[in-house]
Length: 272
Length: 294
Image (cartoon, rainbow over all chains, first blue to last red; front, side, top):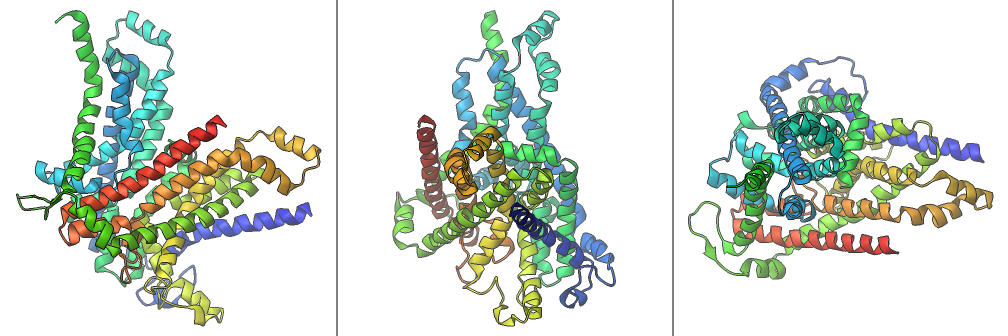
């Protein structure tokens, strides 16, 4: 009896594994077929591999620009969030700041209050500041989106650091900023990892703000670019799938290399 | 300025960047969206016409499309709550008992959640495509061609197809949190129950399920808040169609803002929708506090 349920359980799990992976396999398979065979050839490994689909997609679809932009936005936003949130987290725990509890609650309040239409106001704000269709406008909004959770994480972490280390450093003549740079930051590697992963995934996959703020193709990130490419190549499924592969495979590779960190990072984000 | 005041000023410098960002990009938009919800404005003209609560009255009395979009999102949410989380719990339960390969399953099941909604939408749009899509080809090969249809453009299947795609993406996420919950239950409780002769079903209903209630709660609330705001998958597949069959609140807000340039009205929709989500969050906090006490 035990054996039968064991076999049953394992078959269900294997089926689910296939269900999860198969669409990605199908993407790669379709992306290597030709305009005709993509509609007729149902095999997983196409008889003739059309690798030029990738070069065609990359060139016709401006994917070079989109890819560069996605990497650029991701790196800057991650650094911005890390810097601003760790400074605030440090200040709010290790320094004398009157009213710091209230400041903290206000800063993380957007985690609790959902404002699904906030993008309308952000759009109007950026328009007033002359930041519509600029990298700066998009980046600032995205940094702000990542701050509350990161501040929350850094604050909880810095609260746990022993005071002794700080006192020793003070005797050695460290000022407050050096204390932050040389003592607090090196200790908070686990938090830094969570913040980097959480924000990198958020920026890489973001669509709504990119659609509202960025109308110039030269400034668009990958998700936005994919939608533009879909609009112009609506029936070219082989090229569309090549575009999907270009957009997702870097993330998938990074995911498999760092899956333990990513899973714990996303878990922390979900359970905030 | 004496020394301590100077010290305080220096300390505040650490918090200033975060506070500035908050004021400009969170507090101001929050105020602005409430202000805009009370006016008629096309987004460009320098004049905003104050109309009081007219936008809200209109939403509540004469905007069936908006309420249809809310209903659509509720439908997808209900399916996700039952089927996505039900299956996720079942899978987590199996994996929790059988330690071997736990990491492998966790890694694979979590692959869809790290993909973007746009990519997931375009992929499934191709699989479910009417004429040459994989699903229909498969049905034809299995002599079930009667079932084949263009899933995304058929009014009867479009919204459910969206829900299936959404659940495919969300399953691994539910699985992960539920598995973490199951793993946190001490093993010796199970041992004790088994020695007492309890069967597996009894163990689940009398021990596992009650201990898992806080986890069920978190997963349900996050599923509701996440699914109600579904948008990316829809924009990459149906774009809200056919007709209004797959419109959701976020797609209505964006259409009202960009499509018909009614910024005030779109803001009012945002406020209404935000309040709905807020009520859900408050219920969550209230109920989880109640449960902590009991």
